[in-house]
Image (cartoon, rainbow, N blue to C red; front, side, top):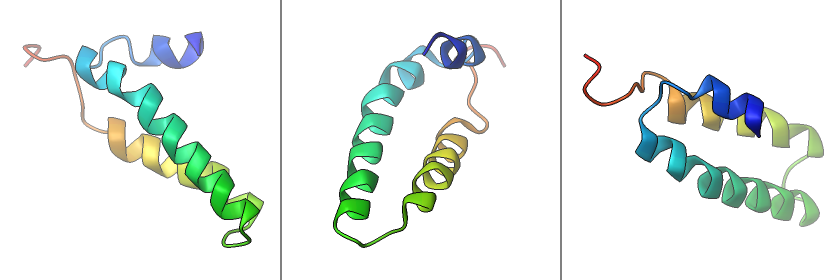
Length: 65
C-alpha cells in the first residue's frame, strides 16, 4: 500500500494508523454480503471508495493549522 501511504503523508498519524483495520473490516464485510447474495460484486469497490473518501476528507496533520 505504498502509493496510498504517500497520499496520506500529510494526514494525521492517528488517522493513518486507524485506516488499515477499518478498510480491512469493511472489505471483509462487503465480500461477506456479496457471498450471502445481499449485494452485487460491482458494489464493493464503489462502497470502499466512498468510505475512504468520507474517512479522509478534510483531515490534515494536527497542529498544521
